[in-house]
Length: 384
Image 1 (cartoon, rainbow, N blue to C red):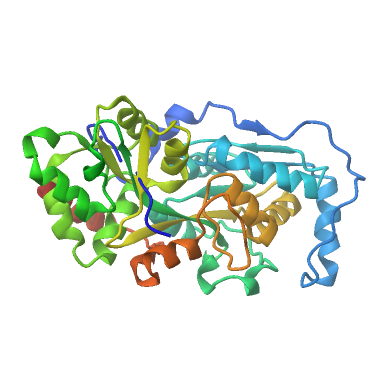
Image 2 (image 1 turned 120 degrees about the horizontal axis):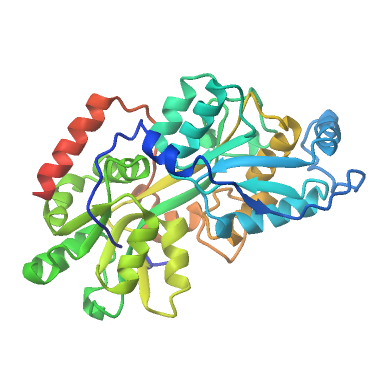
């Protein structure tokens, strides 16, 4: 499987990845998106659990019958969620009232922290792909102590931090406009994109987008590339002078669609690939041939979850073979080796197509302000 195709940007807003008060204020009043239906049957039969689940697992199932709902603070779109919610409700029909927000990465955490500090939160789970923010979360002792029965069927890094469970492994990709670029200019990575823009510098100046390095996801995607790809900083030194930065995936996609940007890079494949597939051939996308960073998307059950049994069922489902198949249907990347599906590349598909040593799973690491500031300073200097 050869690398396939994807890039964009706008002017950066300088904001620390460990802070998010401004983003919180913009979204805290917004209600969560509704998934599933409101009609429930608490006595409906559940499908049998896998035979390797503990004998007393029915206690969790029975406990969820009186809970009947689930609320997730998430930065994942409804399009990505819907096949997962549909499959989960088919397994547990009384859990049809599933609600998920679509917040910014920082706001997922800040909204919960704020609510918890002022009397309590209705959230059951947090879901995000913001690596440094998960690492900060892990220091606060907020995750429920729950060991999924799926753990022994997954890689060691599936529980990437205590109580934080990886359920997708989405690559950072390039999104590009196939009308504004010639076919010979279609990139297969950042090195080849740098070759294209350097060949015609006046043509491409300000026409390439990138995820802002001060944004939680953007920092992870940028730092993941420079820390794992041997020529990462050299390539950034060639490419960043042609870029404009943004911390909004939607804006990045829109500006590639409009042709304001020819390409944008370090975008989540969970968004960019779907945009390309739905563009009637206008957009292309690509992994990075020189080395592709995979950004884990994770879920954590909160100690304060009002519906703890439903939350446990949901996490177990996300990690199961059935749940990972639904993950792929939603346009995200599964990573269980026993999942066979035709909807979206799995982690193993990427490793086969690019070679395993060129696919790097990003590790969640707590980032101090000093570390981030030094990185952004170097990033800005490379951008010129």
